[in-house]
Image (cartoon, rainbow, N blue to C red; front, side):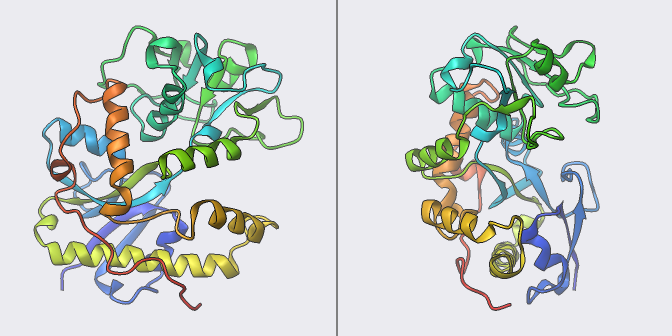
Length: 324
């Protein structure tokens, strides 16, 4: 029996696959990575975690080597991803009009969703000054704009200066980042989130749009996608792993001493499953993301659903309680 080689970062909801705790996982191997794998260049990987934005850009350019499944392994609200100085008077998306904003990558899925927060508030790409670079001195110096044609108000940081240094000395008014810099949550930090209550802003956003933004998803090599039965098996493999992870998280994973309270608040606001898999649960979000990519001039036009997700798979079973 041929082994299917998979790669993804260390997501808790994928651990049951790596540990062999999912029935039928014997023919799969899961290489857990510190960095996102590259399905386009890694010949020894068949299935991998992939940037949603990169996937859409590739398909828009006519590159059909990878086909995505509606399995979004990374999701997240983005209001909390805008930070500013603790003494800044700025505290709304509207207040960033005309300001100088740094971000860690222009075409990244997460930053596209974060710019969407501003765009919803009437602050478009043309309404601010943008600088793209490394968050801190520990982050690699690299091209974070790529081949995307950007307007004149978007440029790389000068002399590769870390953006947190720029924010601290006033050269930037805010920074968009998926991960907070060291010490951000400590008492007396010189930085804070732009929204003084980001969770409240995110809950209101969910009420308006009905989804949590999808950032990374599972892609497969096109030749593997010829076997629909095998792809349905993959969908169910990831769904079962998520079920097992959820059941264990409810009992065994204490991320904070207030884990139960946080879990209850999330369930009441969003529901039991905030990482839904499958086409029908994600279609609205997928359409919204394509719209953002077009509005932000990252792709030229939206594609038909059949072009973007040729296989609009659904899980054979949804989130359920699984005994530990």
